Amino acid sequence: MTVDGVEISARGLAVRGPRGAVFEGVDAQVPAGGLLSVHGPAGSGRTSLLLALAGRMRLAAGTIRVGPHEIPAARRRAAALVAVARAEPAVGLEGRLRVGELVAERCWLARGVTRADIEETAERLGLTLRDRVLAEDLAPLDGLRLALALTAAERPAAIVVDDVDRGCTAEQRTAAWRSVLAVRDLGCTVLAGSLDRPGTACDDCDDEVELPRLSRDRLPTAAGHDVVNGEAQ
Image 1 (cartoon, rainbow, N blue to C red):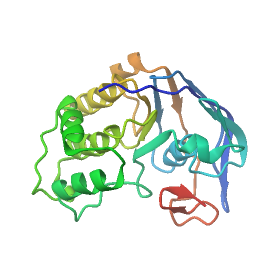
Image 2: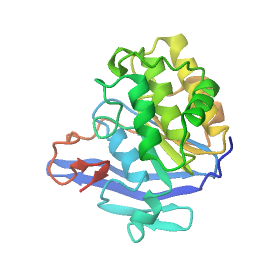
Image 3: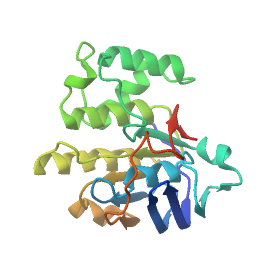
Image 4: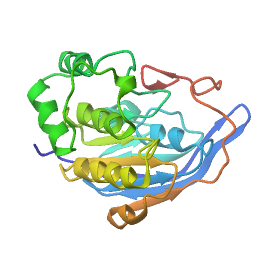
């Protein structure tokens, strides 16, 4: 399975909430089929930035270009090229569903996606699908891999995945970033967020954004940027 990635660039991005800046003055550039690493502590605006780059967060300033489409002018067309695998609490696996149910749901919702597609992608990421296991009972690394496999099987031009290193040991962090790189190696542009800098994996990053602790707003309850059905309002 191969995918045609898309170039994504951003200049002077800012998102603000009722209590001030969530993030501001952010520039980024990632080529088609490349990898962008966004890292920063909780409350730094990392998830909001990833959703903004996906066309799902209203900007206070700046522009984003996703392939030929510019945000905010052509936000919906840009957003159609970018799938969000995980950006909690806005987008994530439903914990009370079993793996088999999540796979069946994705095959039903995503046109043309089959179980065989998801199994093939999961295998590339080092994941064996265990249908009877609840999503909330998956180990952190397996939860990441499942979210990536379900989304990559749709063959989007770009994928957003946040919290790559959440709950992982040092060894598991390395494996998690290898899974992210495996998605990129399909040809997909990947926008990945993590608490810490991904270490040696950053050798393979095309761009890196480090966010300071700035944001005082939290998704999805902060007025002005609630996320509904994966899109900021």
